[in-house]
Image (cartoon, rainbow, N blue to C red; front, top):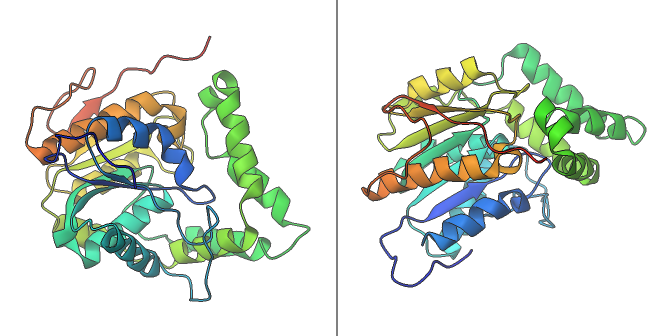
Length: 283
């Protein structure tokens, strides 16, 4: 947990939930920026990642939601804005389904409300099984890591791409397998989202090969009054690929929750669709 600057008690707390195979360090840029804005920021490691033990319980996104509830309780955070990317989005939606009164706002990045169809579920379970084979696991992990970022990051942000490949290779195979099985068994979150009357943002990378813009649009349609942002030059991980853009979008959501003036997003058209200008690329 990072503490806000003094004198900004009205800023809502925010919880940042990371993607599968990574840990909370992926949110470093947003954690720093939002703390400077005056927010309490909690960025927990999911069980099995960031040095946290995996435990022996069966895989379940509800168990991860239980972990999140305990983390919030332990830090004295009764209500917060939840922002999750990919697997973190599944955890945020599971938490909102079970404790909607504790959710002040919701940011869903590179994630989908729908449950996996049969083909996607089989793919996840095959991935999980491969993680148990020392000969096969490195190849599967490398292939998956290569899909976490878009072609612009591969070509113009080589340091970010290299860090993501390294993180994918270093992720504990048993933890990756557990998380894939948990994601495969998650329910459709649509009905719970439809009942959640809080400010919401759904963001997706324009170059995301894992979650399509159409899937993000479908998720946004479940949320009353949600805004949809398609992030140029980003693949599956906008917090790392286009950190300034995603920080601005989250700041806008947080200001909406606080009831203050929105932080302008370049090219924004409210209320439904946010058009985001391209983030500056490295030379």
